Amino acid sequence: MIKKIKKKIALVTGGAGFIGSHLVDLLISKNFEVRVIDNLTGGRLKNLSHHKKNKKFKFKKLDINNIKKNEKFFKNVKYVYHLAGIGDIVPSIEKPSDYLMTNAQGTVKVLEVSRFFKVKKFVYAASSSCYGINNKRIDEKEKISPQYPYALSKNLGEQIALHWNKVYNLPVNSIRIFNAYGPRVRTTGAYGAVFGVFFKQKLKNFPLTIVGNGKQSRDFIYVTDVAEAFFKASTTSLSGEVFNLGNDNPQSVNSLAKLIGGKKIFIPERPGEPKKTWANTNKIKKFLNWQPKIKFKHGVSEMLKEIDLWQDAPLWKKDSIKTATKIWFKYLKKKT
Image (tube, rainbow, N blue to C red; front, side, top):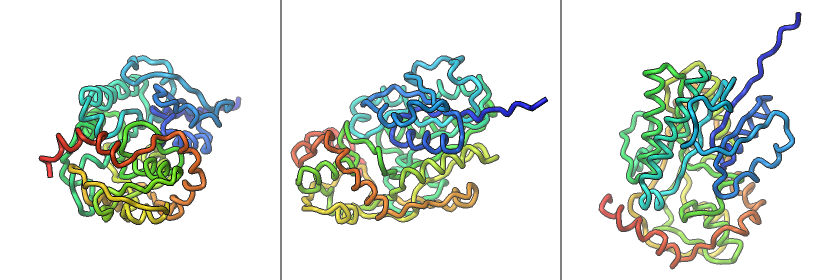
């Protein structure tokens, strides 16, 4: 009698999004059956259109806030990657309850259904924003100091996930993502994502709007490297761990502007933002045997090949940015 081989089944919440869709690509390439739930805000299903006829791909439109404990879509799932949530600084200041409901309580919903079906590993997508204004190289033991509701909500989600590991013995790991970039990065929505802002300005021959003096730097990490880290965090025997995920090599906004090319203008420095984000990635390299593969210059050049994808993105100008960030200055100025 031939022994039936058990299918490798993974589920990605928010799998139609930027990082989630790349994780789906990776899992399918590794011969997983992949299930995706997503509420499809912003018409994101196009990110998965190339999997539409793949028998190993299944999709369900579902908001994590509405997941029931016995949601059948999770049946037989061994790995859950929880990337669903809402982002952006300004909207979180305007509607903090929405962020706490989705990013914290929504995480409870996903954890509970994962516990019900006894998943093998749960990986939570956390945010480096939990560190607040911190301009040095940061390891996972650094003080937590969220500056706005988005950062708070994502950190609460992480604490909840790790609590489920401690109390219910659900195997959980958390990854604190620094500044992810790459193909499919968001092109619409609220002001804030620097690539979306710059690329549209480049397309329309408008000057790139540099915040402050442009010397502030971010630890940019390419999205396929992010997906690989999530996979490794799910297949390790370790659980209850938190990992920083960056390139350990911050790049200035000025250097990004130079790679994109074009004229520049400078707008006021914003409160509540660090001068530098810098991930100490020694832990993830040591324990997950992970290494970033894509250099920043190469990553930006790959995105520029697809710059036409930003044709429908909003065009941000100096005045519209000032209006969009008014509430940012109102509530975060006292923090600096």
